[in-house]
Length: 94
Picture 1 (tube, rainbow, N blue to C red):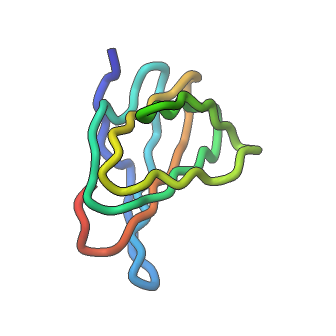
Picture 2: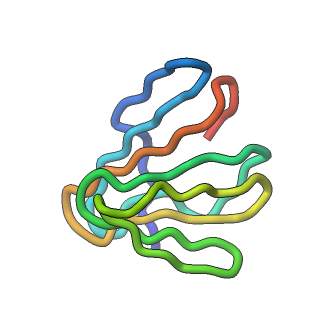
């Protein structure tokens, strides 16, 4: 079970919203989908991203992951003190 969390902080730059999450083990964003694409990047610790046909583990050395529009996905931390970032167009709700 994923413990749903809200962003620790958010900011806008150049028509892009960045939402920063601080998470402990099993904290994250339960299964959901959007009408827009967004990127996810792990800054510290490690996360699992599950989507329709894949399960990926990301850490601070991983490339950002593009999650396409209208595809369900979930994100959760594998380690304490994990930090991850989602970026998406301004005006869209996450």
